[in-house]
Image (cartoon, rainbow, N blue to C red; front, side, top):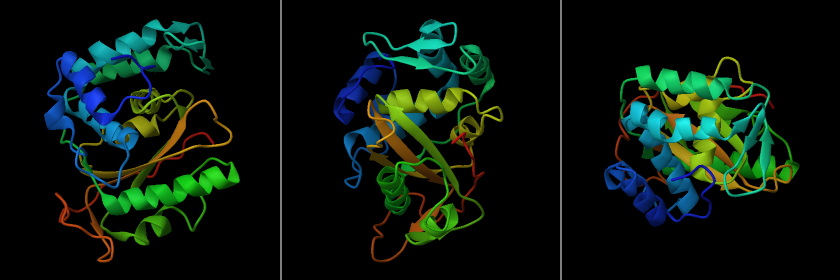
Length: 244
């Protein structure tokens, strides 16, 4: 599995990961989430890789990612695209050593209500061609239109990624976000459910933009609710503000 492998269905991603030694079927908690497309399912699975075995994720994927840097340029393998970073490979090295010290944590499960909230914001960003967490009353208002939460809520946004695998690595590395707030949310052991929405963004035509909402627990409003694992849990978070 490489960071630039694009266009993989959920089944293909599972096979690639199984070939890398992962119990991918067990980690693929969104496999039956019919409200998600394959890339959105893959992003939940990608989260579960790093949470299930942080050390192995570092060994297989972060080390590979580091190898594609030339100074502050990141050269995607097999394609001509180059990403210009602010910090070069230093955040990726930092992530590598952090994951070696990180203990495994609970898996994340899909939430339909959180996915609807994420989709609302993804479409808002796409239509206006903007970035950030503001708009439609803010994160709390967006989420509360679709269900009930307790304690805390969180949101990550990744712009213009070639794949879900690429999006997760981009958020974990967190170039030029010096508090590494995206990474902290992904590696928060108190989170249990997440919603994902993928959308095209006019400012990032080479890839997809993902909005991700997280919770320790989220209960959908009755009109969209289906029985979900973890629906009775309470919810943890830190709202992050990436450079926008």
